[in-house]
Length: 307
Image 1 (cartoon, rainbow, N blue to C red):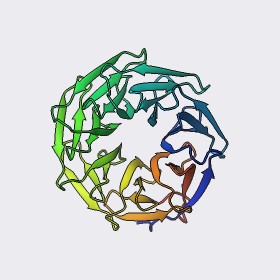
Image 2: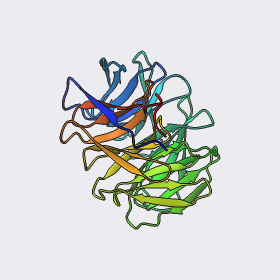
Image 3: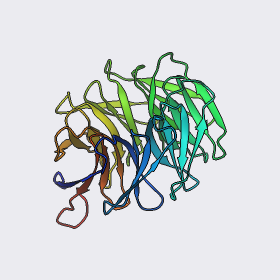
Image 4: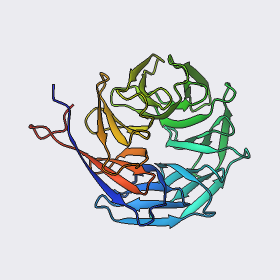
């Protein structure tokens, strides 16, 4: 078994240090795309070259962003209660949601060719087709506060219910199942499909990383620093999952067996949020303090990322 990998971290500062980058994803054009709290969508090449595109209104509050099946990027506008779309050429479109004050946050491409998203304010899961038509599926648990969402290996969508302390599953037909977490007040947030056929999620309130199999079995792994406030998580290039520790200014790595390693970010108070595997095989994370960080996993002696 390979030893714990090392990682080289590079920070790319944005011109506007108050830009507040939050969500980040890999685009179909080989670049990183990210949301900015100042009402812009940013694009960064793997070399660190950056451009940004304004949204209307500037107060729309873009949060999570994901590639769509149509070659564009789709994102939640949490404050404007809309779903946004931006082409790789920078053309933007916004689609209003049927429910006022819906508060969309997480968004992901589904197996049915549509985008699926969470609605914190409406306590629902939404589906938007490529033509902008929206369907909403109310959750059976009041005040669940659905947060992030990911496509699972079983053809369903899996999402975190931050205030209900549970993980939810919804079929493309709208059938919802809920799985309670063992730890009270765990506050699940980020969720991703792991390389092991399960879903992995972070518990911001409990300082833990969780794993849920598609049959609903849950395992929780306490972090060495329970005050780390883990926020977002993604599958890495090395068979492990990588996550941001918003409260500890670090990026973490967890293996399928639950072994955890933490990597401090160079700048204090970076406030790491979204994280994604980039087209160059490195992890990229949005730092709300005004930067995008690249985390390169160093290869072992055999020349491949350790597993």
